[in-house]
Length: 81
Image (cartoon, rainbow, N blue to C red; front, side, top):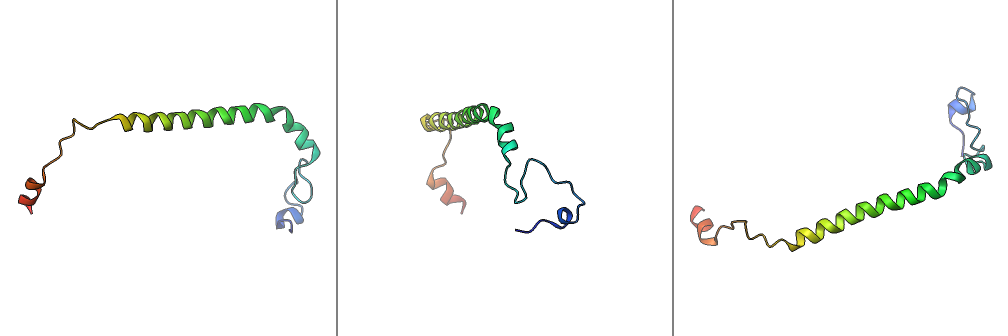
C-alpha cells in the first residue's frame, strides 16, 4: 500500500498514533484501553434498548385485531368497476 500524495510530499502531518502502514501504534492502544469496557457496555445497552423497542412494537401490533377498521365488501368494489 502506497501513501497518498499529500503524505508522501510532506504536505499533511502524519498522526503519531499510527504506524507507517496505518496500523494502530502501541501508544494508541494504551490510550484507548481505559475506555474499551465502558464503550462496549454503552454499545450493548443501546443495542439492547433498540432491540427491546422493536420487539415490544411487534408484540403490541401483533395483538391488535383491527376491529375498528372498516373493510369494504367485495360486492361494493365490483359495482364500481
